[in-house]
Image 1 (cartoon, rainbow, N blue to C red):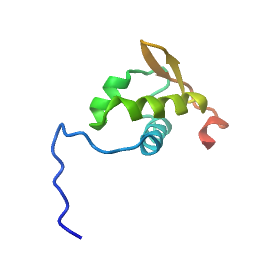
Image 2 (image 1 turned 120 degrees about the vertical axis):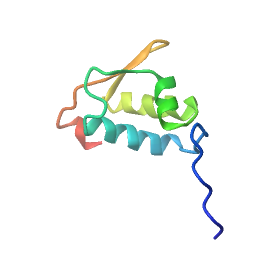
Image 3 (image 1 turned 90 degrees about the vertical axis):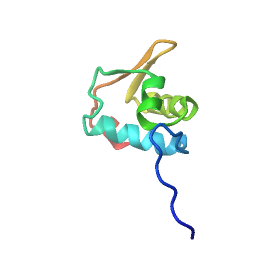
Image 4 (image 1 turned 90 degrees about the horizontal axis):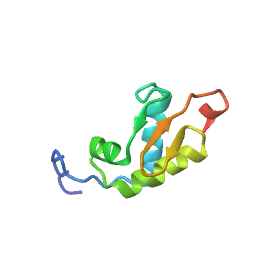
Length: 88
């Protein structure tokens, strides 16, 4: 194995939608993103240093799981976590 490349601030990381889904679900479950928080795909992508495409895919999956509500062309909102929703 060669040396690891340094992390460059502002560089696009290669995170897939599955990894983003897990990270966002964890952030919702631990309260980093509180119920009622309005998030934009762009803000999430900027925070995590990724492109918006995998973010959109992850957010859609979170919406199907009941952890977010998507308001097209505006924002996504974190929902209240119930016992049922916490078992994703």
